[in-house]
Image (cartoon, rainbow, N blue to C red):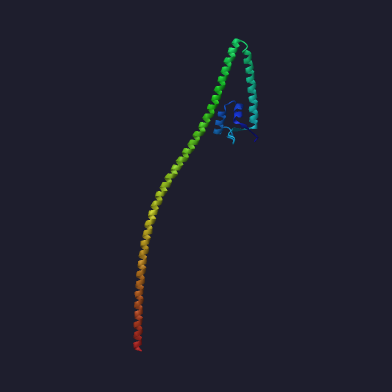
Amino acid sequence: MDTVRLKASEYASLIGVSLNTVKNRIKAGVIPGERGEDGVWYVLVPREEYEFLTQKNEERTKTGSNISNNLEKLKSGFEGSLIATYLEMIMQKDRQIEQLFHELSSLYTLLAVREKEIEIIKKAMEEREKEKDLLEQLKKELKEKEKEISKLENRLKEKELELTQKDLETQRLLLEKEREILSLRLELEHCKKQKD
C-alpha cells in the first residue's frame, strides 16, 4: 500500500488538532507512526487518505478565508466591528474547545492502553508468583525425596554389610568343610597305606 510519511506537526495541522494529540494517538497505536532517529515524530498515512485530508484542509482554509473576509467587511462600521470581534472570539473559543476535546480524547485512549499494559504486567507478576510458589513446593518435595533417598541408601548399606558378613561366614564354613574333607582324605590315605 502506498503511504506518505508526514511530520506529526504537518499531520496535526492537516486534521486540525494539536501536535500533542497526534503524539498521544501514535503512542496509543490509534494511528501508525514513529519517532524518527532525528527525534521528530512522523505519521504514516495512506496516499488516498492524505489526498482526502489535503482537499478537506484546502476547503477548510477557503471557508476560513471567506469568514475572515466577511468579518473584515463587518469591521467597516462601529457596530459591525463589535460584532466581528465578538464572532472572532466565539470562533477562537470554539477552536480551543475542539482542540481540547481532541486532546482529551487521545489522552483517554492513551490511558486505556496504559491500563491494559498495567493489567498485562499484573497478570505476568501473578503468574510469576504462582511459579514461585510452585518452585517452593517442588523444593520441599525434593528435600523430602532426598531424605527418603538418604534413608534408603543407609538401609542399603546396612543390607550390604549384612550380606558381606553372611558371605564371610559362608566362606569360613566352606573353609572348615574343606579342611574336614582334606583331613578325611588324609586319614583315608593313611588307612590305605596301612592295609598295604
